[in-house]
Image (cartoon, rainbow, N blue to C red; front, side, top):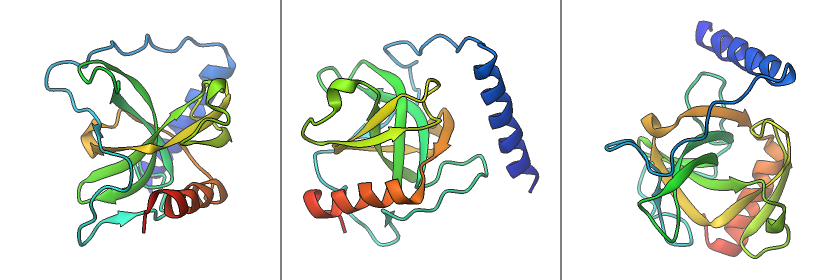
Length: 173
């Protein structure tokens, strides 16, 4: 109960700061600090499934921990240079043990209509609420402690559309 209230107050204050024009913190460096947690990239398609994995289950909870159906921020490596990357929003679509399974988001408008990118539309995970796209063919896993912050909850309807696309075009269960 108290944890939920803390999260709500934090989000309220963040929203107020944004409306008042407060500056965001400087972007994360292009290389994480040594030993810092980072997302792990998987080949296209679903990650290998094990007993107890919960993939494509919508279960957001405003408890300060990342859950499927939430957009969170974490450090994601670049495809062409895994030693570099940046902090970016990731849609959590499931859990594999203690790790979260996610898909990265982009607000770059050139993603519209590109193969493997699905339009999500705007959301509060982006400070300017620009339209976003989720990349369906680049699956990430990240340990819970590697999440920098929760960004927002994606509504059930949009989560289900992403899940349907993953099942129909990428072989997810």
